[in-house]
Amino acid sequence: MQDYPNEEHIVKILGSEFVTHNVKRFKLSKPNNYAFQPGQATDIVINHPDWKAERRPFTFTSLNDWDHLEFTIKIYDDHNGVTNALGKLKTGDELVLHDVWGAIHYKGEGTFIAGGAGVTPFIAILRQLYKDAKLGENQLIFSNRTSKDIILKDEFEKMLGNHFINTLTQEKTAPYDSRKIDLGYLREKIKDLSQYFYICGPDAMVESIGSDLQELGVDKSRIVTEEF
Ligand SMILES: Cc1cc2nc3c(=O)[nH]c(=O)nc-3n(C[C@H](O)[C@H](O)[C@H](O)COP(=O)(O)OP(=O)(O)OC[C@H]3O[C@@H](n4cnc5c(N)ncnc54)[C@H](O)[C@@H]3O)c2cc1C
Image (cartoon, rainbow, N blue to C red; front, side, top):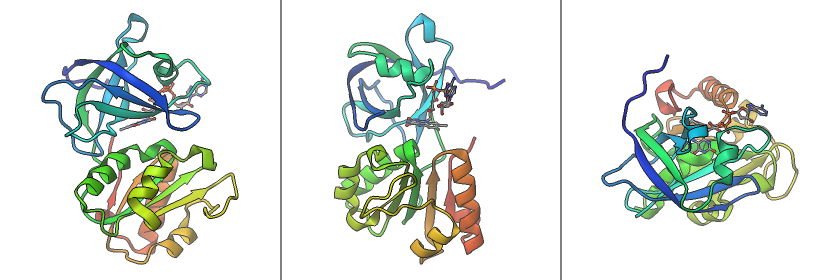
């Protein structure tokens, strides 16, 4: 059984809005002295008796110097899980946040590779780099099923320009690529094998891209993923 630390912070929902057809942005009050590294997450519980036992991890997409917290959450409304319930909460409802955790943080310039809602740790990291004018040659390769699934498309375009590469696996729409991220795709897109590679998405995607990168000759120490 997992041994959970005891830190608990009750926060209020200050507002929420859809940023795609199934991804919602939550603006929350911020506990005093609550800080995290861009890329980190916390476990969230809905502060209601029916949901007290259900704890789920979500990544901060705000920055430390904001006056509120932000989370960007994909709502699965096909079953009665936590995200479905989160999607129905209103301004003023309460959540409980826990300790800050997570291994994904910025180590140096590289390529961020995300699948769907797996982009959330990169939202905070890239926002921080943009704010500090340190985006440099960092690039984001973002894989989604269709163009309507692309989270924060306009903001990524503004921050990254042509260093924002989209690929769609179930739609062919110019100017996007329409291929899975596999060995051949990575060989085409990646020239510098000594840069960092940050991967986040479904487990199978993270595993296969990690092993493809190593097959291309990337050292394991240059590959950053979440650790459980
Ligand atoms: C470190 C970390 C950070 C994360 N950060 C974020 C984030 O910032 N934003 C975000 O959106 N997600 C994030 N996630 C993922 C998020 O934790 C899960 O999406 C969430 O826990 C799902 O909770 P749930 O109760 O709604 O779904 P669960 O019931 O836990 O189900 C999870 C998955 O199983 C499927 N599933 C389970 N039961 C059924 C069923 N009966 N019918 C259909 N499908 C089913 C769902 O489609 C879903 O894919 C993060 C995960 C980790 C590990």
